[in-house]
Image 1: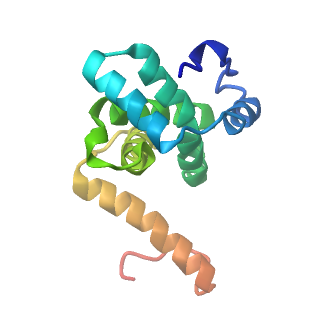
Image 2: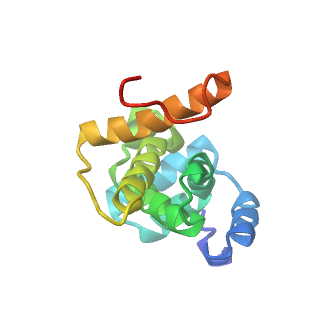
Length: 159
C-alpha cells in the first residue's frame, strides 16, 4: 500500500486548508499499519514511513488543538508535532501489538510542549522536568480556578 504518490497537502501555513486536507485522509487499518511499520523497521523503506506519517497527521492536529491556548502559531505547532510523529515512527515496535497512535501521542505531545517551553518567552529559562511540571501545572490550576469562578485573577504567591 503506497498512498504517498497520490497525496498533496497544503502548507501548514494555511492552517484551515491543511486541517481540511488532513481530515480527508484515509486512516490505516491495524494490519496495514503493522505491515508498514515492519517494512520501515526491517528494510528502512522510506515510502512506508511516509505512509505512516501521512496517515497519522490527524493525531498531530488534535495535539495542536489541545495546545492552542498558548497563543503560538498553529503551523509551527503542527510542524513540531510532525517531528514528534516521525520520532515515534522511528522508535515504534510493531511486535508489541499496539496501535501506532497509542505510542505516537506521547511523542507528539512531548515535542509540542518542548517547543512551547522554548518559545514561550523572549528570555529563555530552563526546561528541566521540574520547570515543565510547574509551567503546565500552573496553567491547569488557573483553568480549574476559572471554571470554579472563585477568582478571575491569578493566585498570589501566598495562595
